[in-house]
Length: 213
Image 1 (cartoon, rainbow, N blue to C red):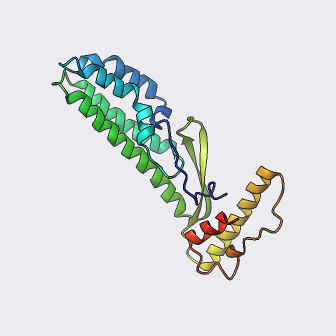
Image 2: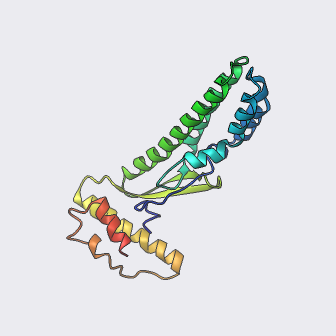
Image 3: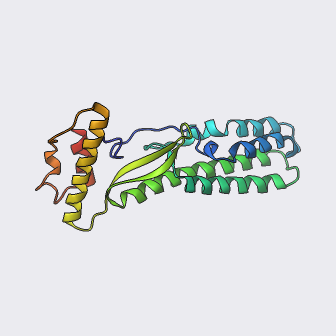
């Protein structure tokens, strides 16, 4: 339950996220096919080709996240377009001096990793700025399928809103439990989430409470 509500941390490794974009295959096939025209030094060609071939796998190794790697389509488009723009500019040049081209590829790669990390984290932070249960549509970077993220937002403006948010959380847990066990939690014993404990309840307290159950 805590995983679904984003209240616990699980290391998630993605295949790269960018490979889920519709133009990724065409773009990177072009980049690989034309890599032999970009450097005066023959040694740059296999190095650059390897960087492009292993782009997704290397992203997986560098995308160290404590939350599932799920990105919104809008942010995936933004990241992909930023990467393609930089790559296209790099490929517009003539042949480069030895070492320049693979170094530029590495710079673009590192910037791409940073953009993906920020995009995933920013969406999660925005989600948690709501009050109560909230979800948004995403793409799973592990298999490029449609997915969604469910989180519990703690940005409530009053104790009444907070109490309603927690009650909504309990209802969500009950529905989730029923779907996964075919039984209903008729009277969940989440005493730590019941009045009078709601007044000073923090997100960390809620997380600890859920983990205990």
